[in-house]
Amino acid sequence: MITSILEKIKQYETIIIHRHVRPDPDAFGSQKGLAEIIKGSFPKKKVYLVGDEDPSLSFLAEMDDIEDEVYRDALVIVCDTANQARVSDQRYGKGKEIIKIDHHPNVDPYGDIIWVDTNASSTSELIYELYLVGKEKGFVCTAEAARLLYGGIVGDTGRFLFPSTTSKTFQYAADLVTYDFDRSTLYDGIYTTAQHVAKFKGYILQHIEVSEAGVCAIRIDKDTLEKFGISAMETSQLVGILGDVEGVLSWAFFVEEDELIRVRLRSKGPVINEIAAKYDGGGHPLASGASIYKWEDMDRVLADLEEACKAYQK
Image: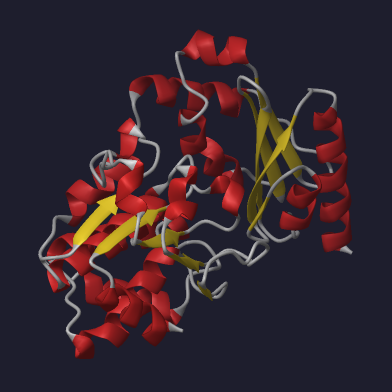
């Protein structure tokens, strides 16, 4: 599979790289990290990055503005995106061939070539593995590519704390830090918290309640967002904080957006991606996302989490 992807990259002169909506460090890291490897290896190729922007992560990557015509005879690579509906910029289907590279469960096997490895900590880890296989074929990993891939791995492993971190993850990280980039600046970019977000973090911690089964939930409506001057996207920076609270086994953020209520689910053991699938979502067994469309459905999601936690503890 990796060899096939490498051959396709060598074959095409125009390559367009996508990733998922509402990007995180791994989405940007794998997307632009791959682009930097391709550019460093084949300077004459035209490589473009497309998708929605996130100002808080602009230090990792900025997107290109391209016309539909560019997709003609182009190779499209979609990174870190489990299902087609979550691909940022739906023009990805206009490419001549599509490659999917991902570490989420392969619930939607789209593309002409599919490389999905759910044992990988991140898609950035997979991109580095792609380079390791390809370096004998002329592929080059630049310092900028290393910075991006390391940032993606750090982001998706929670600084190597999540169970998805393996010995391979540590080995790849050790390789990447030998390249010349500033890790301190990278960490600051990923983890420095704006003052209004920090104040909202305090609000969350003051309003937590943990059930006997270990379920914790935070309801964030539009009025609350407006009160703290925080966007729905920015709330994603705080999802992990409830995992540090004693007694919490699984937790959920319910964030009201324009047309739906975004549900971010996390767990320390109970499988939650099956719950997410019931509510127009999916993801990893311990980190998933879903959507509901009225606040009354929040109780249904919490009841499912309660059941999962109780079953896990038996």
